[in-house]
Amino acid sequence: MEEIILRETESDKMNEFKTYHPIVNFVYFVFVIGFSCVFMHPVSLTISLLSGFTYSVMLKGRKALKTNLIYMIPTLIFASFINPAFNHEGVTIIEYLPSGNPLTLESVVYGLAAAMMIVSVICWFSCYTEIMTSDKFIYLFGRIIPSLSLIISMTLRFVPRFSAQLKVVANAQRCMGRDVSNGSIIKRAKHGLSILSIMTTWALENAIDTADSMKSRGYGHPGRTAFSIFNFDKRDRKAFLYIMVFGIYTLIGSLSGGMYFRYFPSIRANDVSVFGLSVFVAYGALCMCPILIEIWEVRKWKAIESKI
Image 1 (tube, one colour):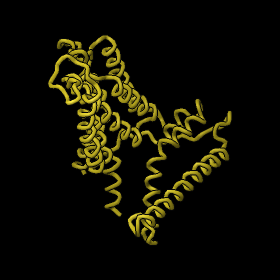
Image 2 (tube, rainbow, N blue to C red):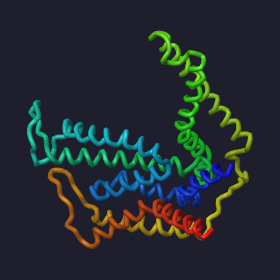
Image 3 (tube, rainbow, N blue to C red):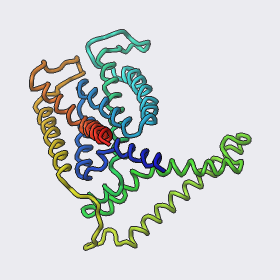
C-alpha cells in the first residue's frame, strides 16, 4: 500500500503543471502550438522541438521517448527526401535529378524545417491531451459554446478511449480463438471485421450514452449551475503573468522581424542583434515554462524529503 502511494505521489509530482488553473494551461498551449505552427526560423524550430519532446517525456516517461523517436526520425528523413523531389526552388543547385529537375540546398533545408515543425506540433499536442482534460475544456467553454465544447471534448478523448477499448476487445477475441492472427486469410479477415463491428457499435452507443447523460443533467440549458474544483489562486496568477509576458513579447518580436528567416530563393536571415536574441530567449522561456515548473517542484519535494 505504501509503495502504491509513493508511486502515485511521484507521478503527481512530475505533472505539476496539470494542477494549474485551466485558463493557465489553455493560454500556454495556445501560444506554443500557435507559434510552433507559424515560426519557421531554425532556432525557433529547435527550441520548440526540444521543449515539446522534453516535456512529453517528462509527462509520459519512457513510453513517450520510444513513441516520439519512432515517428520523429522517419518523419525527418521522409520530409527531407520528399520535399526536394517536388520542390525545385532555390538558387543553390547541388545536382540534377534523373528527371532533369535540380536538387537545391534550399529545398532540402526547407524540408527538414517543415519536418521539425510537424514533429514539434505533434509533441505539443500530445502534451495538450495529457494536461487539458475534457472537464477543463468544458469548464472554460461550456457556458460560451456548450454544444461545440462538448463535441470537441468528446473528439479529443475519442482516440485514446478507442485505443484502450480496442485492446480489451482484441484480448477477449484472442481468448476465444477469434483473433486476427488465427486461421486462414479469410478467417482472419472475418475476425478483423468482427472486431471492427464491435468497436463501431461501442463508439455509437458510447456517443448516445454521453449525449443522453449530458441532456439529463441539463447541460447547455440557461441558468444551469455547475460545480467546479478550479480556483484561480496566487500561484496561477504568477504563472499566467509569466506566460503572457513572454508570449506577448515573442509575438511582438516576431511581428517586428526579430525571427525573420527565408528559404527561397536563397537562405537568408537577419543579422545577429540584441533584440533578435531577446526574442529567442523569450520564446525559449515560454516553451520551457512547464519544464521549469516541474524541475522547481521536484527540487522542493527533495528538500522536504531531506528534512523528514
